[in-house]
Image (cartoon, rainbow, N blue to C red; front, top):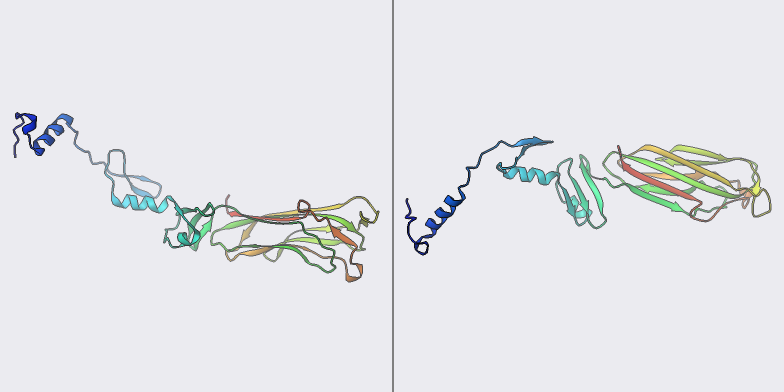
Amino acid sequence: MTFDLTKPADGLTVEERLALLEARLAPAPQVVVPPITVGSLTNVPVPGGQIAAQWAQDVSSIALHRFASKASLDAWAAPVGARAVTTDNNLEWRRVAGGWSLVTPWTAAIGGITTTAPGTTTLATITVPADPGPRIITASCFLRVDKYTPANVIPVNLVINESIQARTDIPKLGLDLAGGGLQVPFYVSMDATNYPAPPSGCTVRMDITTPSAGTSGEWSLHGESYWNRLDVTVAPRGY
């Protein structure tokens, strides 16, 4: 089909006007360039190349998508290696073989622990939630003993997953701040790092063996939160 491009502009058909525009632009023919490989993708288009629909699907599988909640994230059958953010709590997640694993470090703390009851064995417990990804636990505790007069040492244990990871003994100092005895408090500080967190979750405890029933009231902890604390941080392994 040919067009008479010598006619006045107002007499041209749509096809003839389009032909005039194409002739003026004189576009170069599109060169088909093979896609390149970037990371795990072998179909990445180069500038000026053609875009395959599958490339867009592959990129969507590894992009950092946003989901309104963990429930909506769980509904996405993402491939292993995908990442996402839940916008209700601003947490980042990664897909592993067992499901979604938390990338943002998980933290918890208990402060203001006090006790004078004899026979008490657990001052504080923090429960680490289950997570399918490889993670490590870092735990620390700090105590200030203000009153202490028993005849034996008091062991303090930092326990992770029912295993003692750190221990300190409060010695027989015979200190009694409230009663006018030795005016020096005793401090306990311990930490445990790089403990592998089981996928099923576990507990972190601060245990202490207090004096016998006949010596109740002969020891006490300072009651303010910045003195007595149990802190736990759980992060993906390798962070």
